[in-house]
Amino acid sequence: MTPVQKVSPTVTDAPQQSTKGSYVVKSGDDLWKIAESQYKDGYKWTLIAKENSISNPGMIFTGQVLKIPVVSDKDLVQAIDTQSQQPSGQKGNAAGMSYTIKHGDTLWGIAEKQYKNGYRWVDIAKANNLTNPGLIHSDNILTLPN
Image (cartoon, rainbow, N blue to C red; front, side):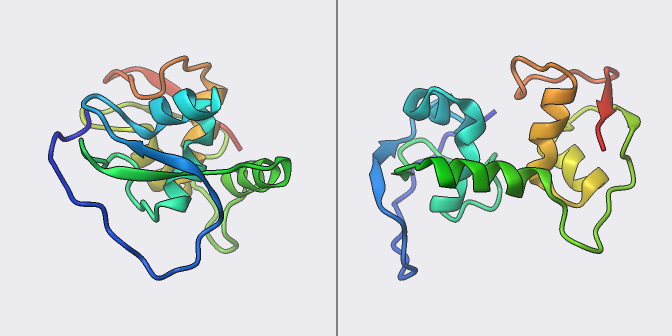
């Protein structure tokens, strides 16, 4: 569940790519829903997270203004490659295994624990045919892909 809190947008000096526009976070929003509304593809939430330097995708707030990047085909291919690759020296310990969901788990957290890469949550969601990756239940068993 996304915390409901008013925050002021922050300004960064880092150069940014061109933006499609901005989006004001509403109550109940998460990056997946925002990506679906902006790109018709929830998996593109990582592009919004990167553009806004969001390190914890579960921490967006009502009233927060997010930059929505313009996406080229090249950007999409790079985003998919980045999500599926693991940093060298950080091999996951769960490839090809299963994981029993515990109370409070998120796909991001599971991917962090198992692969040392939170962005691998997308691979877990795909491998388990999850239609709503934000909704997982304790004691369900997930297949963890290579």
